[in-house]
Length: 332
Image (cartoon, rainbow, N blue to C red):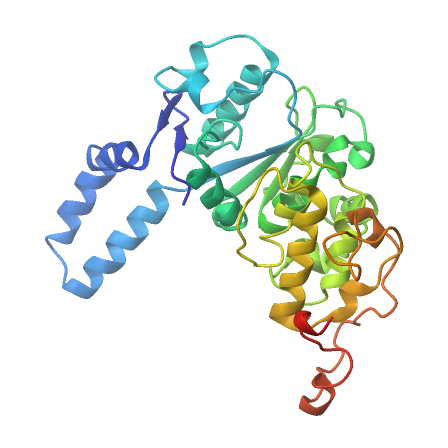
């Protein structure tokens, strides 16, 4: 669960301590205490677990960053609903209102719920981001460049690095267009279960629907996952690699300033070290100074992999897995 969440009713940014304090002062907590006095210990634990899960359900925002995005420092100690009419603030306010209207008490946005001045917190956030989106009850995708009647395939949201992780991690998603209207007025509670939207998502991302709806993080089929990210961009160069840590379920140091080339090299080296999969050496482009077996740029993976695992294909035997398709990074 994220360290900080926005309270959608009041517009206050709450630390974990403040969240717990609100829970202990809530009607739900009083009802829980009353029920717990009337049941056995096993039932009590179930009640506590269920009550906490329900109270702390939260909604996440996925969006293309724009100008005047509010930071943690901007909103600390303020009510977001009373703040500036700048575009970034209006987006945050609209998001929290949507969350509130949908019955969520808590909301999370990457713009203001992370202390980006703290290296330790930033490291933790990047390492936890996939899990935060996976554990959220709903992700709102705001497409600021898609008009009410437009199609989302050309949106810049599909070209950004971090949004790939957010799309794959989120189990329930709703797309909103520029005027904060539901995409094509579709009233589904989850656009990932809408066949028409899924088909559009496949075309826009090049990712098969089975991965869009049931994605498991890890190093399986690493080469295909790199291809999904190959045409995406990030504002900070190193983020093109850091934004993939969660997709591969890898935990590596975040070292801003090291260069995109080094960050990508470290990621590829870790994929090989963890899995022995050398399909990541299937690329076309300029060689990296980090290691000549690796590409300098992520777009070197935009061509389709030479061999793609087929759905339902048998797992390789123990003997095969020791063959030429597996190798340690140290052997390169």
